[in-house]
Structure formats: structure tokens, C-alpha cells
Length: 333
Image 1 (cartoon, rainbow, N blue to C red):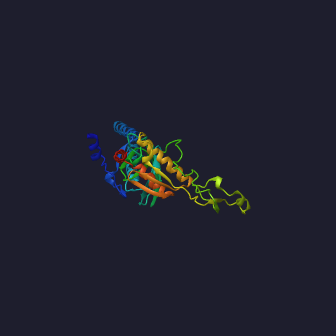
Image 2 (image 1 turned 90 degrees about the vertical axis):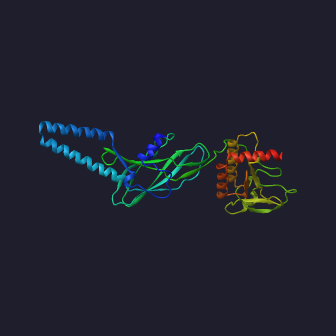
Image 3 (image 1 turned 180 degrees about the vertical axis):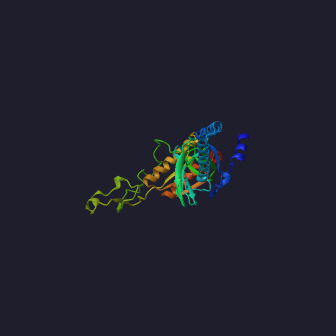
């Protein structure tokens, strides 16, 4: 706790900052590097030798090198100060994948900036630096990656920006905590079971009625069974366009992905992983599906918007809702 409050006071660490952030002079810190400390010791030795032996050229060399160090200090500080920082897009990912945080850096000054390094500072994250240059009156985008392990919202870790340009004698740095977060979907179950099919439905997305009287043909749609293709008509069509046989009563089935129908003894995270697997499988095959997860109920549909809504519900599903659902199931039983 002492280090926490010391860091906030000494390095002006802030909570998550929304919108555009300006790195003013009070937010940029600068210290000598190991090479800079060695350079300073060398200057002291040169100065003492020049004083001891009354070396005019020694004084000139010492003051020249000292002036270069002062100029380097100014350039290093200027290379980082007065930048404008803005968060970018954060696409959703599945657990186990790397979350991508897009950052925008704007240089609204008349001088170029070189070798600006960015990385996350977090005890559980590897220190992977990304370097970028920013021309005068230009912007640059940098994407930092962070590993994910659990579903739900993942807030962006604190970011450190630093530079040692131009001579590497000093290091200037600043901290930024952007108000960014990534939605992490549950990891799909590997080798999960096939889509749940109710009685009277077929896995190819068609049902039966009567003796399946032939009613005609129609254009092929995603999810249609290969067994339903009208091969004779396809052979007669120029270009070989796919057409499907249609039977009376053979409307496409609508799958129902119901969380409550999964085995009660199954772990909640495995249930969510299986539901995620089914959502992706239904979307891949183009089958409309209803989605039931606790109090969240979606009517049958298919498409990117429906998939995103279902995966979002799975990612944000809470344990207290699971407890209430189990209690309701027990009362019903």
C-alpha cells in the first residue's frame, strides 16, 4: 500500500482516463541511463584532470561534452512531452487469445519524434516493447497485445511510454492508464457434441411433413443439405448454379440453444464453452437458432449481429444468475 500511494504521488499515476490525454511537462520524467551515468563520471574525471594539470584544451573538451549532454537532455524530454494520446478500437476475442488494444499517438508540434517505446507495465504481463516514430503534425497507431485467460471484461493495463533519443544518455518516460476494455468470449469447447436437434428435426436444417411431397426447386441457401440438391436440374442449368429440392412442409428447422437443457452436474464454464461452440457451429452452417441463457432470450436468427449478441451474453453471464436459474429449475422439478 505504501508503494502504491508513493507511486501515485511521485509519478502522478492516475486512474483510467477517458478520451484524449495530453502529456504536459509535469507528466514526463527524465533520469540518466547507465550510459549517461558513465558519461557523467567521465566528465568529472576530465574536469579534475584539467584543473590539476591546467589543461586549456581539457577544459574546452569538458565543457563541450557537458553542453552536448545538456542539449541531449532537452531533446530527449521534447521527444516525449506534449504528445496527445487517444484510445482506439478493441475488438472482442475468445479466452486464450491475445486482446488487441489500439492506441493513437498524435504529434501536433513542428518537429519529428523518434524511437518512442510503448509497453504494458503489469506483474503478469511480459515486457514486450513496441517502437514508433511520429512525423511532425502526424499521428501513428500502435497496437499492444495482452493475453487473456478468463471471459468477461478485460481492462487495459497501465501503459508506459519512454524514449532515449537521441544519444541514449537519458531516459524520459510517462505513464498512461487509458479507459479501454476488451470483451473476452468464453473459449469454445474443443471437439464438442453436434448441435442439439429436437425430435422431428434433421441436422441438415429440414423437417419432414407427410410423405415429403415434392413441391419444386429453389435457389441453394447456406445450410441446405447436399442430399437435397436437385442434380438433374443443376446439370441442365448453364453455369451449374446450385438449386435445392423443396418439399411440402419441409421448412428449415430453427435450433434452440438452451442453457437450461445442459446436464445440471456440468460445470458452468464448460456449459458456457459448449454454448459458444454451438453458436459458432450454427453460424458456420447458416442455421437460424434461438438462444436461451437465464433471463436472456433471443428469437431464432442468424448473422453477425445475432452471433455477437449471443457471445456477449455468454461472456457476461454471472454466477449469481446461474444460482437463481438452478434454484428455479429445482422448484419446477
